[in-house]
Image 1: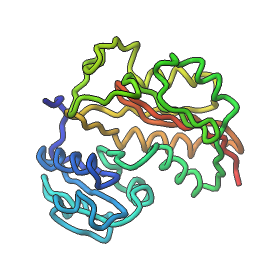
Image 2: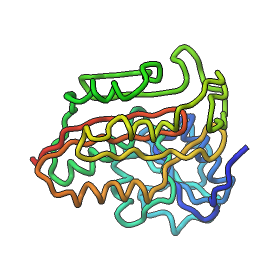
Image 3: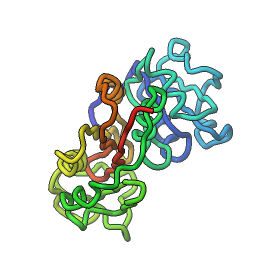
Length: 249
């Protein structure tokens, strides 16, 4: 089962070539997209399902619909290389931890900013989230992970989650996790950017490239010597957020 998204002729950037990156690659190829997969591991799982190996990110015009290319390297760094000149239609964040936070941190570091975990507001953010929805907290790193799935359980394989309840537990949902995280940090940081991971098909989500680029350009235009920022990504059921204190180097 899948949702009605226009995928054909779109450009998808897949960060990571492991299990989830490979599933994303297969989905986008099958639906007529042009795909670039980037992974540090030259023999990762996705390598077997691509059509072309490339040494550059300038590959979109060389691909046909339904073709995929593979590039060895750091997915965050290569996304930085490509996004200023050719914003992908879709970005799949299939690398460990908070990929959006890594992208933002890299972008701001190149602009001359220093990022540190902003620990001062973590307790207040947690007060805005029901305790049973918090699955992981690292106060030192200012990271919070939320989920409707209890820690001792696993999601249904290739789940297409209903909007109002969990498919595994039938637990009612208060709201989508991106909205919950937006609420949790409201008024506690100077800026926030919680990007929505849209459910393309069972078990597969992606963020829109233009939303990521809009967040980066918003930060670039902020022009403050110091500010605080909450940044993350979330789908209907799960989410992760990093909170930073940012100062001009």
